[in-house]
Image (cartoon, rainbow, N blue to C red; front, side, top):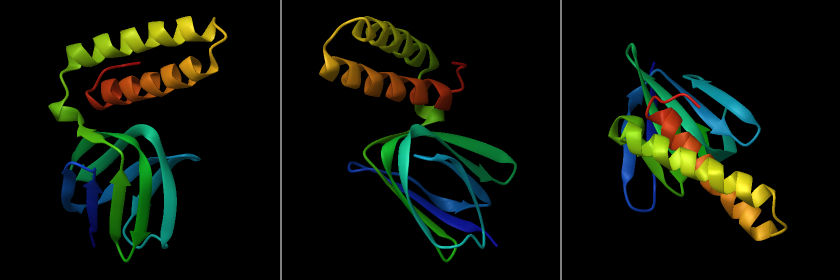
Length: 136
């Protein structure tokens, strides 16, 4: 029996298909979902979701949100999402490098709001790079 997985962002539906397995970046760690999973509502962190369809794994960068699992249906509502195969690896590497430098600079300063903003930008850039297949 397969899972029906939907990833919905405010501007588009990123994924809507049946799959055998999904791994979600929950706020408490990675969460694997197979058919027959108990009902669950969980918060999602910025990170990479992986969906197995057949023998292929598809990576999707998620920018925080929520997931509901019930009756083999996984509904994921996120602030933003992007399929890894749609992300340019070189630009993702550059964005990650820039975000890493910004975070290092912010950590050495006293501006708490800049530290928080830089941390969020770093997490988004890291998720995009990992989803595109780059190593962090």
